[in-house]
Image (cartoon, rainbow, N blue to C red; front, top):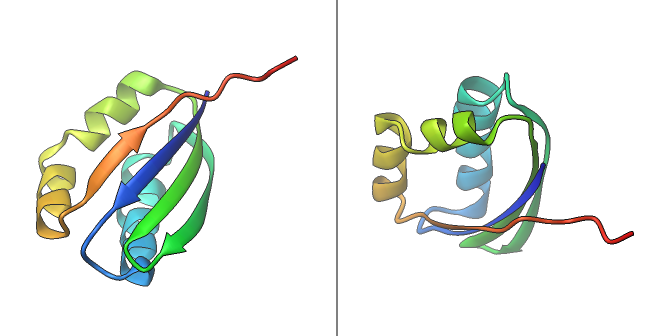
Amino acid sequence: MNIPIVSTFSCTFDSFENDVTNLFLEDLCKEFVEAYEFVKVDEHKSHLLMNVLDMEKLGAAMTCDFAIEWDKRNNCQDTFYKIKLVE
């Protein structure tokens, strides 16, 4: 399932992209996120498009202690959307 996430944060975009890529996507989510792409909106906002194979596992990863603490430390707020293919 393709999931776009709009995120705002207090760290720089480069720090956000690095941490989310290396600590979250490439570590905690590597078994159920098939592909992803970041789009920089501005220095404190991004769009992340992910192809998620297991939404329950994504939910568990995003609510683990590490993710919650990282979000608090960086004032990160995420808004999730679903994309449906128009045929």
